[in-house]
Image 1 (cartoon, rainbow, N blue to C red):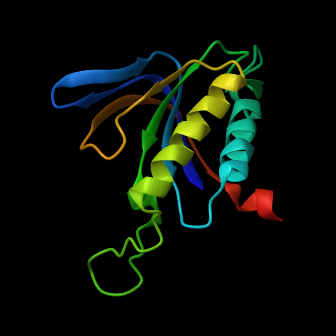
Image 2: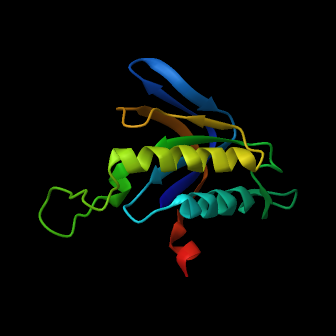
Length: 150
């Protein structure tokens, strides 16, 4: 599981002109799932993200978690994170999990985030989405569940 985390001041996702999720301060998470990912990967990534200290304290040092900062999460499924562009000019998505595997793991990941006390808003799995955000910092981190397998 690969998650691109962007700390944001505000963010929203719209599908077919309808807003499906919106947050104020928090994280926008672009979530990619590959073939060998399991519920353990979802749990690992959610716990790691919930515990990251990416919000500043009174001294300007990144010392507060998202919960301590009162932030929320906007989770977006993003199979293109597993796009391979090594050959040719068109990406190959063979490393991305099929929807029937990816969607339940993305939902599990979101449930795991909520189990850590986070408010979770989402896009719509498999939909064409318009995502808007104001990146805060900018702070962008990649979380890879390969760490759970080592």
